[in-house]
Amino acid sequence: EAGVTQFPSHSVIEKGQTVTLRCDPISGHDNLYWYRRVMGKEIKFLLHFVKESKQDESGMPNNRFLAERTGGTYSTLKVQPAELEDSGVYFCASSQEVGVTNEKLFFGSGTQLSVL
Amino acid sequence: ELKVEQNPLFLSMQEGKNYTIYCNYSTTSDRLYWYRQDPGKSLESLFVLLSNGAVKQEGRLMASLDTKARLSTLHITAAVHDLSATYFCAVDKDSNYQLIWGAGTKLIIKP
Image 1 (cartoon, each protein chain N blue to C red):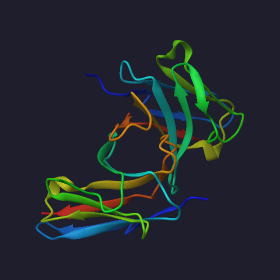
Image 2: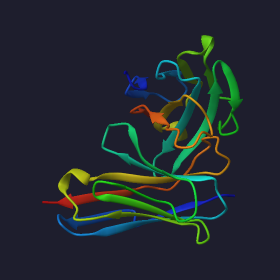
Image 3: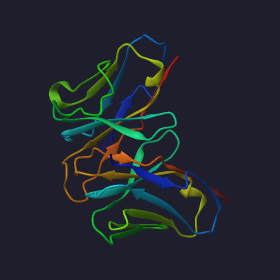
Image 4: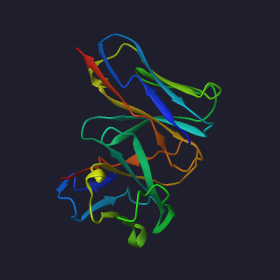
């Protein structure tokens, strides 16, 4: 079974440019999450999709960030325009159900974003 | 605001030794997770702890949860080099995967 895949693994862009990160969840997983870890800080929740709908986007830092999940399959996270403080590792995760005992959350290996 | 504190943040130890990583959190929570991350790799789920007194073991790792003390521990027994990684605890306050994470403990085990 393929795991959660993220693309690209690394991205280096200049301040003011646009970057789009992609996440392919495990097939059949309705729930998709984005997290990020900014240098020196803890991993933070960004948002949660159930199929194509945004269940919770309370962790999105500002309106420069736009997440989509058209068709309820893969998701994209666009940062436009990117700022220096957006640098960090962006993780995607998926799960089949939420709140079920012992249900696991499966993570991708992350996208390392560097904004110069 | 829910906060999760891990300590130590960095740990270097010799093979064969025992050690414990601590995870304190500030409010009640439905569940607590332990994850492992190798450099450049995914976060791998190790344990999910659901209730007070829960103890789970996998190989040389054992995790426990004391909800009254708001404390979870990850105990490493007779460490081996392969256990070198960064270990995170995370609290799921409302069982919705809005995880609140600890800062991570970077564990280096020297042969």
